[in-house]
Length: 439
Picture (tube, rainbow, N blue to C red):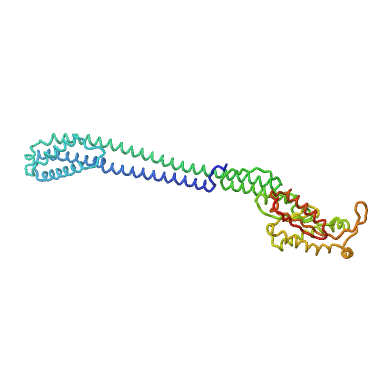
């Protein structure tokens, strides 16, 4: 089963900023929308009910002024009073029509409209004459005016109640908008902080685990458990760390397995590489190099000279591999005077040929002049019989994976042993490549 989908650190940080920005944007849009709505309501209130209240107040004052003028005309006769009466009447008519056309939250009361229309109807019949009192029929407007004043008082009281309620609604709406805006903003910030804390804790936990694992590996403890289930950057880092730990553990095993004389990989490293190449379905050649008559040389000249001979073979193999341009090889020392080279099949024969030429040219120089001249050294076997041992030669056995139906380290080693046994019965240095078909 695959790992559960999980946001990466970068995605979490981006998500935190995005959520904060989104909630901030929503809060801003809501605040501006609420402000626009309240501004619109305030404008409607000012241009409607508030203006109606002011105009009703003005109309009431006009009615009272007309009443005072009529009372004054009962006492004195003055042309200026007529002029003032006409002007007040025109102002009243103009303001009344404006009041009727205002956009109100509630329409004008029907009684008020009837009283106003009746008063205006009678007022518009008045002709501009010198004797105003005669034209108006004396005090015939007074009852209509009183009724209209009463309606204006009721209307103004009603408008004041409506305006107070609207102002209270605007205040309540502003408070509600402020609270919702603050809530959205705080919620967005809280989500951003939560994501930030999650990222910080994840970084802290992962860093702590990696530091602890690093310390343990530095002390040679490779058996450390690291959580690799995360699917973020630290999960990738943890998996890379595990791979590094495995590689370090393998290198440590190779180091411990390496031959102390030649510092080349030993049996474990060679078997590991063989198995790895087989698993990857790679074709390769297993080249086995064995020094013939090494024991007699070691007995005659001592182990230090014997170590020189073994090191010389290592140097020859490195030089030959460099000459043939091999880049995918493994040079290993399985112990004593035996070496193994894993290389591509096409490099196997050039390697064997050049190895034998270089060996036969350089190894005789390890002997003294007398032994080189005679071509052998004298020694004794286990029965204390004197025996003549030839100078050291080399046997090179080559087995390719193409000659085996089911290649494995054991199968390859078994075939090499057979070839080596055959080569050791031949004089001088020799090589043999198993060219048989798969078996």
